[in-house]
Length: 187
Figure 1 (cartoon, rainbow, N blue to C red):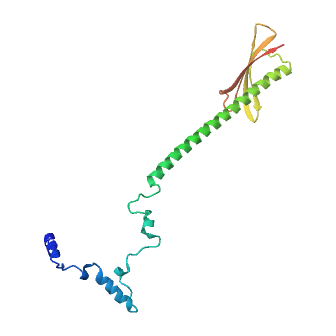
Figure 2 (tube, rainbow, N blue to C red; figure 1 turned 30 degrees about the vertical axis):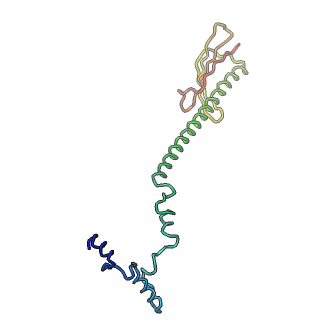
Figure 3 (cartoon, helix red, strand yellow; figure 1 turned 45 degrees about the vertical axis):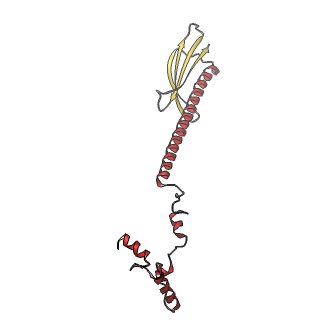
């Protein structure tokens, strides 16, 4: 039936062939539901029972209070971006901590090498040694660190004073000098 025909027939009070008695959709189903409900052993038809609502409701499953409301929470992309940011920050912090630790260890080694060189100068002065001009190398240990000390003794314009140049390096890598010290020893 065309749209215009339906409007005209409705205006004349005629009912369309598909319309329900009393003009309400679902009226026969409701009437049948009442009949079935009165008879023992019959359950209500699915349509008469109304829509099924699960415990918690469909709205709760979808996470929405209202059909058009925005879902509260984080998307997977947002979580991944946050994890990446945290990973980069953690890597930077770890790197900074590693550099600080390496710097502290290097400072400790340099301090121990300086003490070893000062101990050699104190030994020369305490034993009243007046070394001859020469170059020598001897091992030393300070604070559990094995060192090698290169000693260069040179004459000065004053024959009663000698210049002693000390270079303390790591025994595992003697070319790497950790501390240099120059002292003067008198006769």
